[in-house]
Amino acid sequence: MDGVDLTDLDRFADGFPHGVFDRLRRERPVWWHEPTANTPDGEGFWVVSRYTEVMAAATDAATYSSEGGGGRAGGGTIIEDLPAGFAVGVLLNMTDDPRHARFRRLLAPSVAPGTLRLLEAELTERAGRIIDDALAKGECDFLLDLAAELPLQAVARLLGVPQEDRHRLLGWANATLDYDGRELGEATERSRAAAAEMFAYGSDLLARKRDDPGDDLLSVAAHATLDGAPLSDLEQQMLFNLLVAAGSETTRNSIALGMQALIDHPASWNTLRNDRSALGAAVEEMLRWASSTPYNRRTATRDTVLGGQDVRAGDKVTLWWASANRDAALFPRPHLFDITRRPNPHLAFGRGGHFCLGATLARLEMRVVFSALLDRVASVEPTGPLEYTRSNKHTGVRHMPVRLVPA
Ligand code: HEM
Image (cartoon, rainbow, N blue to C red; front, top):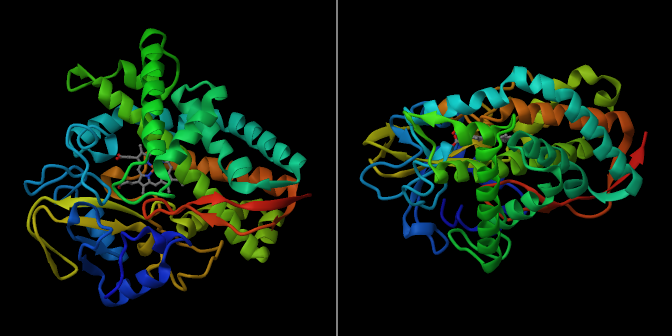
């Protein structure tokens, strides 16, 4: 695999490098990636690309920790080590059981199917308005005008952020998650300023929720007790950051890349226009296809063997969901976009104890947006090239210029 550098973000500038991962699955399903000049912390890491091994590690949290292990000072779920006590062991997704499971149980009711059913009518109305506004423009940026909007409005609703502030969330998420003009582990003035503004906004909002709680998830977090004590200010704050990022970025990218797949496969678009009952399976295929979270990292807590390779305690182990989702052993003709694919056991939302907390919400948002789009729009025509986010952590879209032809 000489010359393959998964920490060189230019490799991801035109979307996820499926060709590289086809080779990895075939030749080195559990591969030791030596450090390069681009690799944070100057150390190598394991790259797990096949479905079977990704599943094995994702469902064995005692061996593959989301915090750290093997005496390592930091850890977390991205390649670069994050400090313990700031992100690690504080952010829900970078905390191990048993605290993780108890933390998660506090939040689960806010995104449970029953709660979301009550939200469905509101989201449907919002989606209709979003598409009508985009249609009124005729030519628009599918990403900003359309794909980003419902996830933002939904996450604002979920967190109890006033709707008029939602575009500030978008600006902060973009500036902190997009690696345009910077490298892994690097911060720029812009990304630092955005993180500081978001932090200050979150603190203010949480203070208001403590005094005057609403029926939102942040109010739950502001008043909850875990292991006999309230969540720390930092835990509450980091939860706000996590949900803004996780709740808006991944869903909008799945919507945009799902739409691009339908543009490239007009027969599938026409099938959906004629038969809305096919939409549930189509959304699953869009999720598999887009795999907007390409990987998450774990740290081995003990010496172990994965896919025949000796993994040492403390090693960084990256699980590539996007690659597992193109594994021919599970998905016949994996590079075919097939909206009738069944079964479709994709790992776009991860697997195991950290399975995406917002999966039901994300699926609902996608169904609602595509349903409103199919009702109102005859076709979506590109008017310029799709521009990808330069990142190995988010397969996403920065801009997607299109013309909407009304139905
Ligand atoms: C299509 C959209 C989405 C995708 C592809 C996605 C993907 C993922 C993945 C792969 C994980 C597992 C991380 C790991 O194992 O380390 C995850 C976890 C998580 N997601 Fe999502 N997500 C999406 C939407 C959302 C939404 C809408 C929300 C919130 C409203 C959300 C909140 C979370 C949270 C809080 C976790 C951490 C769960 C835990 O550690 O127990 N996600 N997501």
